[in-house]
Length: 65
Image 1 (cartoon, rainbow, N blue to C red):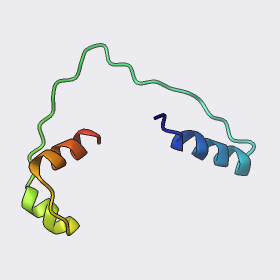
Image 2 (image 1 turned 180 degrees about the horizontal axis):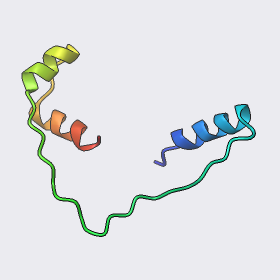
Image 3 (image 1 turned 90 degrees about the vertical axis):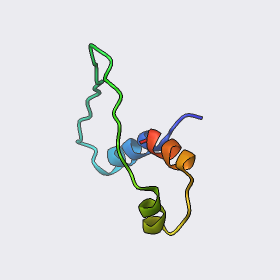
Image 4 (image 1 turned 180 degrees about the vertical axis):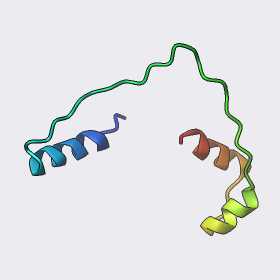
């Protein structure tokens, strides 16, 4: 499924700001970035959000960020 959110935002901006200039850009990394490890407290996350999450659920959600 293709994410259409950004294109909808651009359409709204163009509609309300006709003189706006948009430029495309792309991040290019010559070498692959190393893996980043982020420590977290699963109990704190569940308490903060008011819902129980398993370690696998937390890791899956954070990997999308």
